Length: 64
Image 1 (cartoon, rainbow, N blue to C red):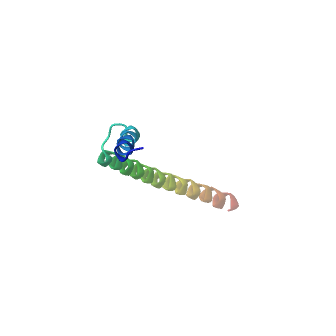
Image 2 (image 1 turned 120 degrees about the vertical axis):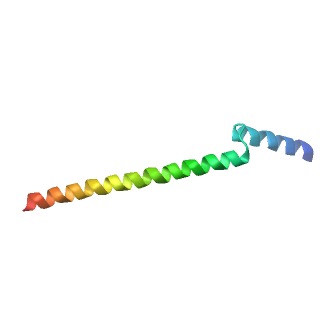
Image 3 (image 1 turned 180 degrees about the vertical axis):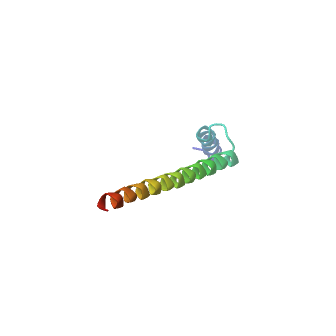
């Protein structure tokens, strides 16, 4: 396969993978998704901590 044809096919595959977005836009979306995931994990950690503290308080109360 000629090099020009390989380059054109590669370009078409990248365009299809990016869904019409520029590489910069794809990177921005990935970064935003990662930040949202971090925020979600942080919220889940805080919620689990609150539950654990309530459970601990109930255990201590039942032992008194």
